[in-house]
Length: 501
Image 1 (cartoon, rainbow, N blue to C red):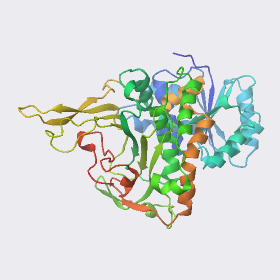
Image 2 (spheres, rainbow, N blue to C red):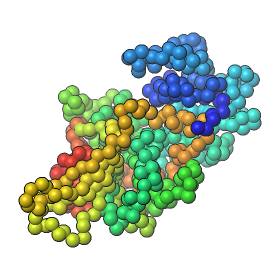
Image 3 (cartoon, one colour):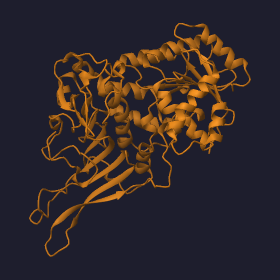
Image 4 (cartoon, helix red, strand yellow):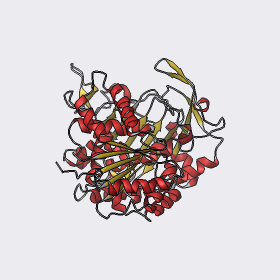
């Protein structure tokens, strides 16, 4: 276990949604298991003027409902003692000078500093400029690191513009572009599954794999985030970041080592090998939809256009599906299907890999029904699992086959669930960038989706609707190459869709 140096973790937007739901609970979980360094100081930065004591009470109010059986009071006391508070209102440039004096002159604050941008994407550039202007990003007596949440930019040009502004004050090793999806244990298990087992490596190519499906579906809507989501949409929010990262992990070549640079080098190669989607071919490779009112878990829910803050003529997609090809030796001709949607029937994330049928169907005269393919499926959420579907003989005198599922739920009941942010926060303090995005990764991902963004922006009047609580919009079947290819609805044996969605 690597030793974490004492540091000061400054959270901008500490009273915001991300900090309340993810960062503060993750930090407290690390406190409980003794993984935070003894001299770690937590500094909350927010727009309101507050006393430190009032902020500590708020931290307790955030955490206590998460532990209905009772919270660890010793750990909570230790955790609250770490917190300080600093008001930093928009337009108050002097606040950054006061912050600089606090960090650099008060011996209670370690010289190594992490600045976490838990703020709206539009506010990141201004904060970095002011931190740089106050000299807070100079690595004099200790290191300085900045964590930036996705989305990194709005398209390729805005990402490059944002990056240019960061390079005025920061070097690439100081920038941690966080994608919390990569911190999920099952996502990391994709790398273990690929590189710690030799069993499937000979089959992991276009000779044996028919296609790959990567799905992330949610039952929730936009949860009051209309101001962000209506300017983003499913393509930017999920596919450009999370799902393309999963694609890269599935398709990448074995890295030289598991070091951050070697790992990211191979992911970049995959993203750069994705066949460009021209504007003329967007409709053949991409599909979008928008949810209307419907029923989720027996409760009526509004449609997207009825959500508070959403313009009545919005054409923002809440469902997006994409077909891409990776033009390299291993994956030539294998389609990768990515899809994501809000207000879907199920909340789940999975990677489903369908294998080709045997070259000769020797059992065609004895089999009942169509030929069934082999699948390997990795469940990411809600369950950490791996499944494999194969054909076996039905017991009896006749030679009939049926599909069986070999299930491996590798998360044992006695093993604790770890939130993605817990590991990622430790990685930032350690300076390990393995699970963070390098700028060329970000640019390569934007190049994949940029043509789609442009076409959808021009074709604002054409978007397919789907009822909330359904499997998504009809018509997505046109992305598939053959009639025998369908979306997997679930990882269960009956999960192969019989309806042409």
